[in-house]
Image (tube, rainbow, N blue to C red):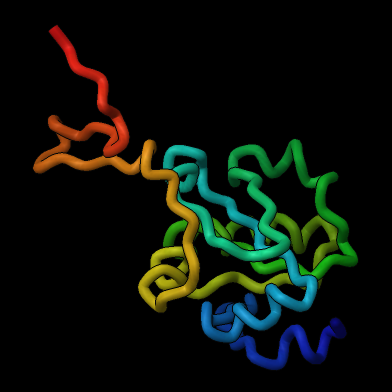
Length: 142
């Protein structure tokens, strides 16, 4: 992977570079790392099914940045793309330059039909917030 190929399908807004899920998909099969920045409660039941997935919740990133190489090609993603922009700015200040933010985050990833690995035991269901429970929970009470 070279920088020209990496940035070829991206677009820029506000001094940051973004990529759609459709354009990110082939890059993720060429050694680019997808950094899932969602906190566990947002993503532990549903993760993108791609090679090179690295899960580092955004709140843990400052203490775990050493797990990433400034030479790596990174696509940063969260639920809808808001936190990934903040993290991109933080990493830029630390010398990272080969980064893109996944436009629309994992909401657009899933909506566009890209593969997701579900943990059915952690998917919540219920008709209202007061009735949410894990779908796979078969425990009976009383």
